[in-house]
Amino acid sequence: MTDKPAKLRSAQWFGTADKNGFMYRSWMKNQGIPDHEFQGKPIIGICNTWSELTPCNAHFRKLAEHVKRGVFEAGGFPVEFPVFSNGESNLRPTAMFTRNLASMDVEESIRGNPIDAVVLLAGCDKTTPALLMGAASCDVPAIVVSGGPMLNGKHEGRDIGSGTVVWQLSEQVKAGRISIHEFMAAEAGMSRSAGTCNTMGTASTMACMAEALGVTLPHNAAIPAVDSRRYVLAHLSGMRIVEMALQDVRLSKLLTREAFENAIRANAAIGGSTNAAIHLKAIAGRIGVQLELDDWTRIGRGTPTLVDLQPSGRFLMEEFYYAGGLPAVLRRLGEAGMLPHPDALTANGHSLWDNCKEAPIYNDEVIRPLATPLVSDGGLCVLRGNLAPRGAVLKPSAATASLLKHRGRAVVFENFDDYKARIADPDLEATADSILVMKNCGPKGYPGMAEVGNMGLPPKLLAQGVTDMVRISDARMSGTAYGTVVLHVAPEARAGGPLAIVRNGDWIELDCEAGRLHLDIGEEELAQRLAEWRETNTRPNAADVSGYRNLYIDHVLQADEGCDFDFLVGCRGAEVPPHSH
Ligand code: FES
Ligand code: MG
Image (cartoon, rainbow, N blue to C red; front, side, top):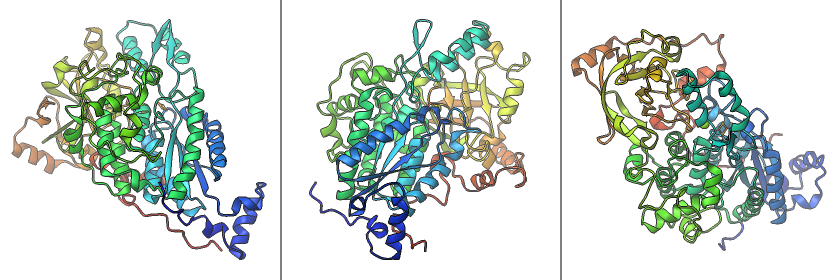
């Protein structure tokens, strides 16, 4: 690129010989920064989600050091700053509850500070969308550096995958096949290095989405956290962001409608998490790109799932990297004419296709050829019907094929507590053909739309050898989970969606091929039940809960809208605010 250097916004802090310039420079100088660092160098923010409470991002200070080396080498000046770190494993009620909060932190930190461009250090599930949402609302030049996945879990001589093995083993405990001691022995083996979940869960999915969107350097998604090449990539990203600052390569040049279409196709090919549908919508909303749930059907369906990773398949992220990583997948898609927009610009200044057209592919079992896919019709299945007027999703690659068209009677749980209280009841009226329905776990209902949609099966059925049942809720599910699980029902029960009026014994029809989710009651009956519905899950007193919780319930959008806050949707730019003195 030959664009002329843009006027640096940081000059509006550091570039004047007056009272304000004095203040901005002087206080920074307490860190031992010499004069020449303020003389027109691009100031590169390093937005860090490091936290020891977000174990997946706990190695990020080291990652930041390598980014800084690259920034210095390219003639920029790096400034690292912390933002809210929403880690999936510890945060309650769910890291999704604070995704938008973190995005506000990112947005205001960027806009209010002397930053010309930003490196987004993200890893755990919600940190990637939160950082991209905040940066997109500012539309500054930005590049994502992911933390990378953990090494393969190891337990009793075999590989075990983050999250996925927890769901598997806990069902085996409930079915009486293994002891609680055997179960707990897997803990240390599952998480034995720095990094994010090593399955194709939401963290790996969102890292792949960032790469497919073109906001990372090639291979960012898959290099293991502890592989020295991860730190090389951080260094190179630090170098590149300085050029992006000088060339004014803003996020809006990368995050185009075309980029999102590429990402949706890539999600199908990797067997990615259902959570991507929510996060991509939220990111698109921040940059002003129209994206609808039905785009997932139009662009994603019919795409073969090529990547044989857990939870849909067999392998883990280490194998994915050694097999060629995302560039290899994109190459396979592109050679088959299945990359919707090969010319889309990426962070390194080259097109997506330029970056992947010669990507080596080392292992056809992990990254399968199109002729022998893991699932021939991958992608997310978007469902609609009188039970989900604004949509619901299901991940066919993680489901049981014979249940994708199913008619069964509802076993209804009013909320997650009700589910926990009754699921193990030997008298629960449920058979393998029943459909488990859970209400009030949506964005407003939980609140935060926790990953409880893959509700465990009744132990009495597990003991009979039942391994999967149709489940329906307004919740999400962990990207590491599996099953014939209908998620993200919109509108949610708490907002008065039809899910709220399902009763025990109602017949429900699921037809993935037809994209249909139908509650088999008459229109009049449906209308009458909806008219009679009253909010039961009432809002707690403001004095009893956090103020943020009430703000969340009042402003969160439904799943089909990306669960952003209504007042945060849109790009507000990075015009420099007034002086502080
Ligand atoms: Fe952080 Fe899975 S819990 S990446
Ligand atoms: Mg997760």
